[in-house]
Length: 266
Image (cartoon, rainbow, N blue to C red; front, side, top):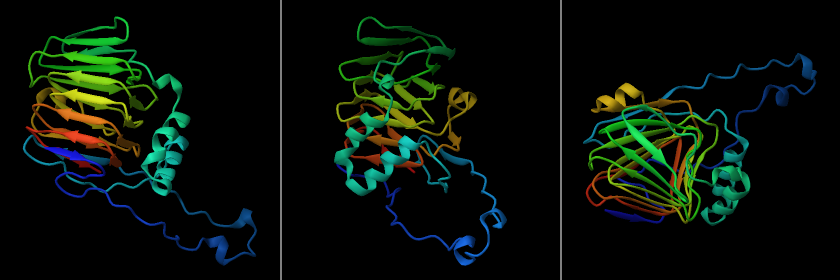
């Protein structure tokens, strides 16, 4: 299956909403009341989002409210709505820290067995068990650099969880013969020069428990992140699915899953 351009897969999971004026504020209706005496409505608590799906099902849509964001991501998203996707790469390069553009760093294997080596511009993860969990301080790949996972088989899976504070920006190449999970609550971007060439690929700003991942079966993702997953490059899965999960999911590149499903869950 090949999808190119602005596309949603299986069903529309994202809709643009026009800016609508909110209800009048209390101090707009009573301008004579001093600011210090005006009542203030309590802020609502951020709901916990949850998405679940099984191996044979499409991701389901859950209701989520946007209650705040880092200034850089909000700036990018608003200008994206107003000016179109052509300006997005420039905005990303201006607003994201330059420290993002490197191979993943600070890797630690927390479950299963794997080794990490980084000769030159290539980082290699040699996975020795069918399932492995790795924590990273930063998971980004600059143009001209490659991160490769060597896995036991096409059904092997590696969960990569970013525990640092930076979004993931993939401008280089991420490759594997098995399935790669990338979890980053700060946001995930596949840039215009980015290539994800894996057996299967899942990118999410919501988290999954270690027990759920290691046991397999139905996968449940939870979290309060309102960060985005954006694809401007090429994502391909040779033997399984491509699934993108976030508060806002955008595809302006190419997604290929000839032997699986390509789906966006927002």
